[in-house]
Image (cartoon, rainbow, N blue to C red; front, side, top):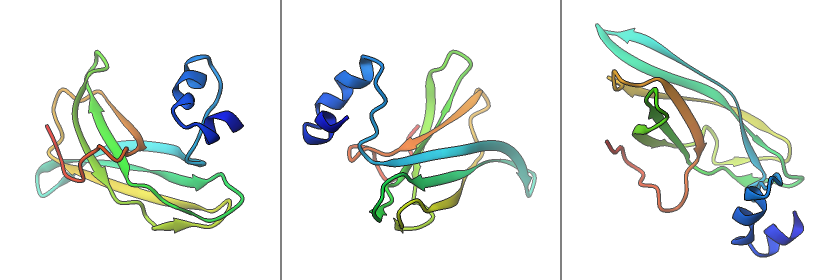
Length: 124
């Protein structure tokens, strides 16, 4: 969507109409989460890949990870640094993020790129 690139606020409108809009030209793929036990405490481990979809190098944004309950409500989120600050054209990098003592009500993990408004720390 060339218009969405030239007028970024239009991206939401085009996305709502069902068009695939990816202004960052980055993708988060192959996300897997699991619970591990470290020193008798539960730890949520989230792994996946970030891929640069562009034909040129790009800075890699921070990731925003969230734990949602069975009703799909976000109950906790945090941000994590990307595995590499910059990815070459078409390059992908594996990431791994951890959360000590995840919420017991957690049902699913969602990973997206953090917006500038997202804090760099944890929130509950």
